[in-house]
Length: 267
Ligand code: FPP
Image 1 (cartoon, rainbow, N blue to C red):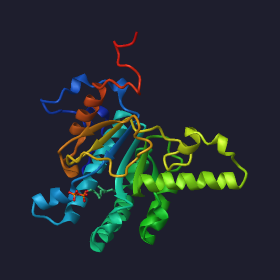
Image 2: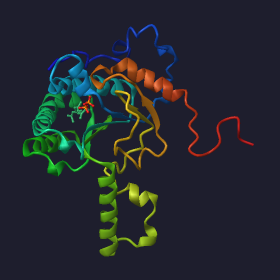
Image 3: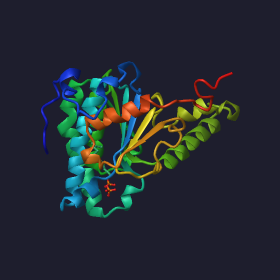
Image 4: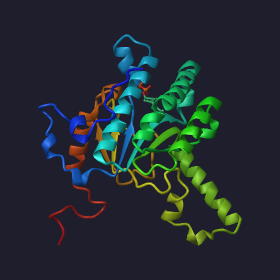
């Protein structure tokens, strides 16, 4: 796997030489989204377009994720989440599923030093107990090794589906009621949010989807209630720090109303 030696860079060196067409000097570092989420789509098409097998696309996707993790750390993002494997992805050919599980484990082993050096705390969204033993073991090791970190949270959605997450939350709340720990009148939005995999994390302010698809694909249905979306036709392996900046610039240009009136339309 390609290893790019930029991890020790500062913000200035990491973001030096922006492309001329990018309005990098317009970036407001005081308004960086707290939580950025990526639906990493298009690895397969990226590979096919190059006459490679899909596995090569996933490997290139991991290199891209590494760059985005570093970029988000340098930008001071609190939470970066990424949709790596959905509850529906088990329907893919067995060979591709096996390769992905192998790559997840290998990537985690390879990247743990980076995550430690950058003070990143890893959490998983989804049911990782259903993963093959080696992948699960490596993930659990990584969870423990980074649990005390105080920097950015990297939330990896693996075996994640928003409907499954909400169903699980309903079940957990029902169990609390049955056990007398909670009464049904106390089930409010906060109680539901507290039973999601994202409990304790801010909702994503910006959701980026690559490869041009215009859907949420069962991702963070609850948490995305007020998220801003940035869709790019770029395939995930080609998504880089500059396109991330472009997405943040688009976010900073939006008028976020949360159901209220836009600025200038208040009475
Ligand atoms: C979507 O492309 C991508 C995936 C299903 C996997 C993405 C995973 C990573 C980049 C690595 C994550 C790393 C860890 C450690 C969890 P696709 O196969 O749907 O592409 P296509 O739509 O072009 O077929």
